[in-house]
Length: 231
Image 1 (cartoon, rainbow, N blue to C red):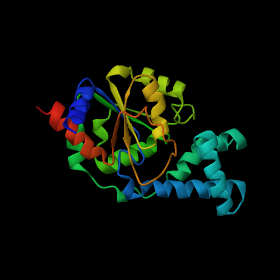
Image 2: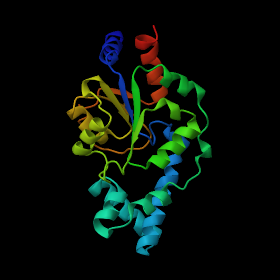
Image 3: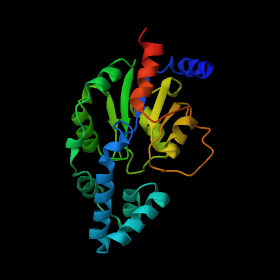
Image 4: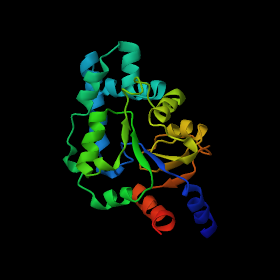
């Protein structure tokens, strides 16, 4: 176990670009904030297609697996206005997220720059970060509009993100709760951290593109900081 931990510490010493997914990663999944978004997505589909919510949920799930997001599916098959979709599904109650001074302190101790890379909107990301009190810790946000509505995991979009912020992959780490979204990062040379949640997003067993795993981002960062950066 000690050897494994020493290997982890060695592998993160050179990291000075920290890339974080937003939903169920930057905040704990048990807040159930994203469940609000999921429900709004289903309602949007039902209203737009004038169908029952149970049928909308089936389309929502199918689009997620076929197009990697419901939004991408609705654009591809129904040519919807993506901004109206994003505004609707992110009209949620953010008050369940509380100011987190301990998290803010942890982020401040990470060397280099920190970024949000999300399939959501910048407005949604800012609402989350402001609710947690950690907005000032981040050097940039790359949202679904920046990605031209091509959601993760898309290799070319990942390249665009890295180029936009001049991120050197060999000195970068990406944290994400959906394993498949870490594949492009691994392919391009970033270290990868999977935040494991109660949601079973993926049934794939071969996860050799995952470098680190944790069920708690803050706990993992605290360990890294205490053993590598805060000496």
